[in-house]
Image 1: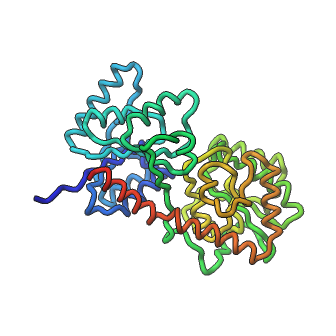
Image 2: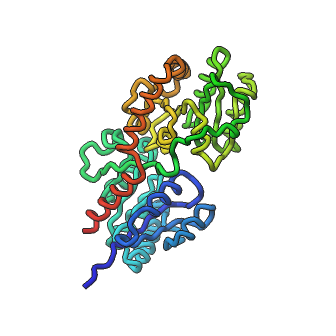
Image 3: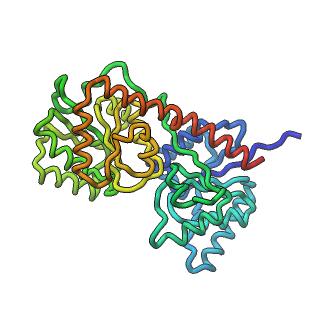
Length: 372
């Protein structure tokens, strides 16, 4: 008798072109389709990334699978309805990529007899969502954490926690043989140093700290700053006004907006800065920069600390303009051999711990053990 493949349902609120959706797409397209029967569940079919999932041939389901648990009777009624759908489709594992503290899908999975796991993608826990996170963790059969600090802070004694970091696709992000000069909107010389960042324009990213540090340095150094990301939001407007207030010349700073050829842009950078103000799960932008051959400076927060742990002298205190300025000046003082050694240390650590291949292998082994 042929044993059927374990049926795994990956849940995610949407498949818009956001970081989580792209990370899930990379993971699922590389998982062994002959070993697992993969399904995807989301709340709606909006977004360009949804079509990529469809075109690949994934079995996608659209269902309002989450619900507020207050009033409790309404919440339980909804969970019961979702559990019947899960049971009908015979899912062995429900694998949640939901970033919030919602635990209604956990209840539904339990009622259906499915194992339920979730990926802890951020350092959210305390405050008003504390009780919900505790319930979400209690109901889980297993919890995927993305950095070492999550274990220490949230699950120091829990056997449920399993470290599987997101990994970078080294076939998409790599060092180019030829420098892509035409991308930059300003003139540069052999001595010009390009500092850059790729980020969502949200306050937690601390982009204003980077701009403030750059403002204290560019007059005495031949520097340019490139900011990649969609700045058409409130925070983006705040940042734009901040640059005007500082009177940084437009020939020194570039708001490049949202880009698709990120690897080429990263190859123009001499230095990538991750100025986040508080802990993240496993910031993929740092991995992409290192894979592209760019040296990375990062704030001393969980997630970033793990990824550049082999160059601790390139970490700075989050939120400190002065500390970041000092780190940038330190890098500018190094010779080429010293820079290359730092790059090599970061790259070797990445290849040993943060590749897509390593992530896929870890998830396959994890699912095999969970369903055996």
